[in-house]
Length: 433
Ligand code: UD1
Image (tube, rainbow, N blue to C red; front, side):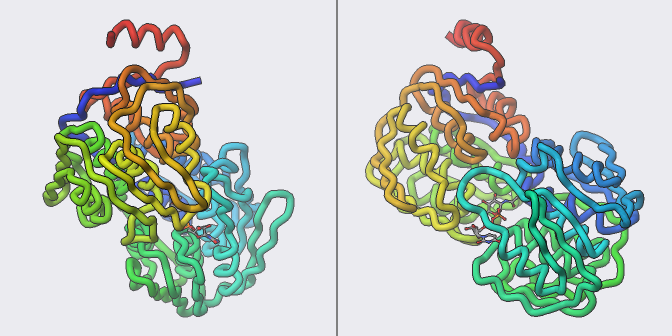
């Protein structure tokens, strides 16, 4: 089993380049099957979740070809519309974004079947809003034997109000509505940067979507979509993770290929706790040379503080000079890293959806397990700060969403290696000393 072994104490310094946004890529790759023409997608992050989704897309008959490591050609022409279009394998059941094929295939073929989505275990993660949206467009939705199926004679545009802001449901409804008859309005839509990216991608295929990035999205259905070449936006969360890692390790890192506007919530918190963030056109520099100050954080839908950055930021606050309160308002099970962090000496008490963090001066290295993707990244940051060696297991979660994470950290001077066996761990320890 692959693990990371890390020797902490080295400030991260240098430059790191951010990959394409995983969560945008998942929507865009699924939407690419909505035309019979070739679609070329650039800046696709080469992470486990995108590879699994591409396999599934291939599994339903589409032609998928890697032009280079980050450029993928997809052509949906060979998908047989009369097949059951069933997306199901042991891998797809593990990723959350498999549900994007529900909306994409429903839009194009008026029916779809996908294994109920998995994803990180960070809460109940229901899909009622997706179902409500498809039904509002005239589809019948059934769940049986772990498979969710949709079917419609015709999809007809409608007015859809989402009582909870959901990224996934907004994207899914937008995809199905792009090929519905007439006009759809999504109210209380999510506003995350990747919603805008998926909408821009669909528009580049000939869709008519207006208002993405605001809470009202208006979609005028079109008859068909066409091929396109499109480049995915940079990953806001990967960028944020390196920003926080720079601050926590008292480093100095230039994070390249980012859209600074997407990082504002993170930038402002880092400035508030005493790190120094400088924004350039498409990069940010994060510097810190002293113990950081505590603060309070509440996760909220964009443009609020992202839930996907909550664990990484909590690690930093756990080393700050005082007490911080972190409130998680999106997912109910996002403090699973707290028990692991306690093994490194952190003082965090969880009460309901709130973590009360009493900053400590330092962490000590420990053997910990990544409970999910972002919590795993947070533990890596903790280990980079900790005295001595740490071993992080279950890094398969981290590999879902971070491309070449260990390589990028090494490029910044971090002492980290991906290892398979205890012998490799010993070798690393001897090498690093
Ligand atoms: C997406 C991201 C994930 C991020 C999250 C919030 C992808 C693949 N994943 O997840 O990394 O943490 O946005 O920014 O893009 N909800 C319902 N019913 C639904 C759907 C959601 O009640 O049908 C609730 C959820 O339980 C949660 C909230 O809505 O409390 C937000 O979830 P949502 O925005 O849908 O998250 P995902 O799209 O799953």
